[in-house]
Amino acid sequence: MSQAQPVIAIYPGSFDPLTRGHEDIARRTLRIADRLYVAVAYSPTQTKKSLFTVEERVEIIRDVFAGEPRVEPVAFRGLLVDFARERGARVVIRGLRAVSDFEYELQMAQMNRELWDEVETVFLAPELEYSFLSSSLVREVAGLGGDISRFVSAPVMARLEAKLGG
Ligand code: COA
Image 1 (cartoon, rainbow, N blue to C red):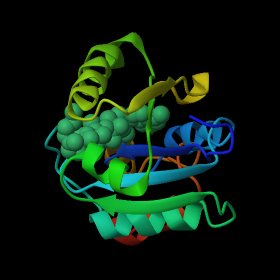
Image 2: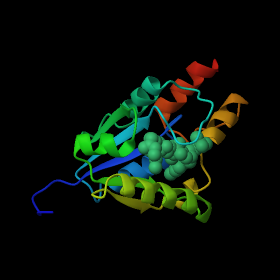
Image 3: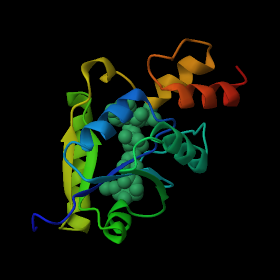
Image 4: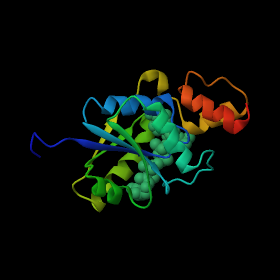
């Protein structure tokens, strides 16, 4: 790759909703990439009951990164590698919160490379205080009236309150 080529990364996930842990990973990515697609999957590998629609999740990400022109929120259907190739993104970003994430992440990284041999997966470690976070825990705690203000930023809080009628 020539020095002049911008590094375009893609951070895929379900982001239902985006947490401060995801935000942390995205902001760290901007230290090593020129542009970042935060990409919400219509077809996640693991089936989960969703709270926000894919479109709502993209809007939330847009609000959170409103001041960061290098981040572009998008939704994608089908295979991640097909979408990444279309957008010229050769670097897939994933966060590794704990050793327990590793096996699943390694499988996905290897499968993605089988599907497109030009893609590289880069794993980033989140800030320690976010290493236990997950979107489903945030959904659960918010749904039961717990305080999640430390775990999600203001636009996410507002959407959760509106959605859950808080
Ligand atoms: N902070 C907070 N939470 C984090 C996190 C972080 N830094 N990193 C991961 N998580 C959580 C997520 O919140 C999510 O929690 P939940 O299960 O409670 O909702 C969980 O870890 C993992 O979710 P996510 O990172 O969104 O991954 P995923 O498993 O939902 O999605 C895709 C994986 C979308 C990347 C994958 O399914 C995909 O590429 N799909 C497209 C189809 C395809 O190409 N399939 C072949 C793949 S080889």
